[in-house]
Length: 311
Image (cartoon, rainbow, N blue to C red; front, side):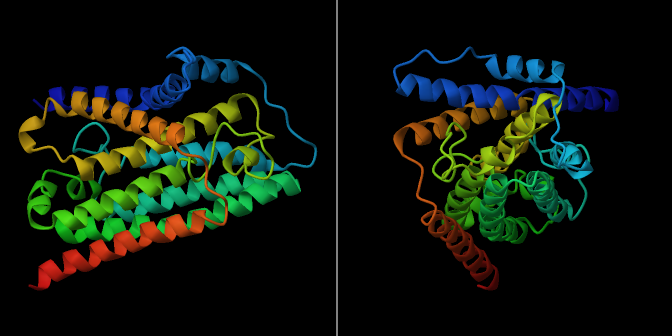
């Protein structure tokens, strides 16, 4: 029986690692459909990653080892987080009590090295994007941490596989409004951390509006493939956290969990595509208001769950 569970976990891990580019394809197809276009092939993100991996990287003479290490460390941090976040089931391969703190800091570690790599180029243009990335990241982290506080209080655990497990079904019946507020906050965090509209637009080429894309302009070849895949992986991880909170599955769904989660992740990517098709990117001075609103939503949810505990 243990061998069966190991094989199932191994297959889940492979599926989770192969899924992120497909989610980006779903977003692109949704936006193309809204625009009356056919859009790129479904496997286009995989083709682009394969093409980048076959190319050679080009380095500026002004860069140091920090520029080369940035994409590698960022991807390594996200892959480590993927081993701690339950994606296609309620289990995580390397979960342990308190791993929620490590996951939050792994996200921050990946951002830090991406920013350092951008600043290492010596370009004021990339430095502008790095400044915006750090600013918005610092504003989204309180909303994420407070959302984790709500889940920790609700489940009585600091392990993600338990915080996002079947016990949330009971919490929905007791403190449903708090869970709704957490979902709203996590959606804003997802759009911010994944650099999607209305915070950022990955398809833009306007110098004054670029954030994430401007930081990776000097990367090429396999390193740019690491960055591209890492962005998709981060979208999947934060989307999984959002879906586990929004649609908790009972324990009886053990064998249906992976299939249902894949369908839900694809549906979430479609929703993000609809959001990007229905609204424009916010002005930079409006983004802090959006992130502050997400933090307020999480803070109110914290008050609700603590009040429920004391009553």
